[in-house]
Length: 88
Ligand code: SF4
Image (cartoon, rainbow, N blue to C red; front, side):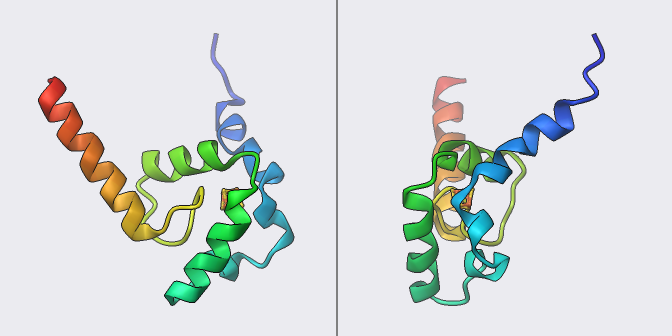
């Protein structure tokens, strides 16, 4: 069956994120203090896992997603790639 709701379903979790109560700029920090502040908000977020996977899957480079900074996401992707190489 053609699922025309899939796109909405992919982002519906966003409405449940803790960040809905904060300005978006809080999740695009320019320094380490800002990253820590965003991470703390993500730490108690009920959709953090989905959020992180969304950012990884869509190769989103900027901002804090699922409690992970840009650098942390790059590290996760690199690790996953090396695991895939070993497994493949
Ligand atoms: S994990 Fe962080 S960025 Fe993702 S939805 Fe939750 S509060 Fe927002």
